[in-house]
Image (cartoon, rainbow, N blue to C red; front, side, top):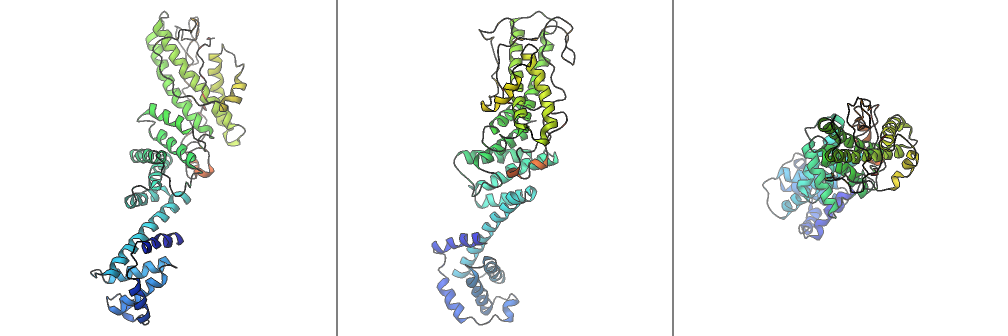
Length: 415
């Protein structure tokens, strides 16, 4: 309420208090409100009583002042002059401030996103440069999509999440970063929201945004599910490229084209290894993450051994130091074989590959895509209060492999 009073006080500095001298006079002349005032009749007596109440409470109790002003305007809608003009401006200002306060309460304090979004649109209409409603519509829409599995609002949530990011990165800021911990924390969640909302419509851009989200110093960077979802995105691309390799080069002699395809696959495998290592490292001893961590570690070990001649030597050390290294970007597809690549560099060998990764012909094979590998499913328990949670809309499942910070390796031999 004090905030509303402070906001309304601005009008005094803008010369909108011209009727105030008249108010003092009316106040001195106004008797105790008559029955006419309580009945809402537009009489001089009623108007004087309501205006007296308005001036009495204008700087001390905005709600009472608002009530008096609304009664004055409702009873005398056709009235013209300085007083009704001022009252309309004051009421309009009160309504705007009240909407902002209610939005903060619904979005930042209560997490009632379904109620906050329509109100945010009103606030945005009042103040087009206000960042808070952009965040509320974008992030709130993402949370609702993650909770309900309903994608009908995805396009709007995506649009406003991007607008919020653009506004923040251009230097704008909300009055408060709540419910986030800081600017970086907010940007991490917003980029994560964009990635989540693009998973079906634009998988490649989705992955890029998940990686971007993990760059900011906030909860997203510190949450193991973040790296699990990055690993999962790479797994999808890996399965696609692996299928293409089998289709084009299975049971055929090795060629420069097949070797190039294998190198591109190995780039993806290395990214999965990195992402899973990060997920395992961040999960640490968190009791709630141990089931997922075990699954992530299983897939990580499988892929690491594939890239290290069937040995897991150095894996523990890699996990220990992976978070001290930058998270690598999505690899650029190779168009030619690296000049320094030995002829024995890991490449998919010919032969039929079973669903366990074995081959019916001599030589190594591309490890099987992890068909059961998924990322933690969307969960409202991790989206409603960003301040106290480490990752939005994700939770561990029995079929999850966690991503770790990627580390490229171009010279590992196959087993």
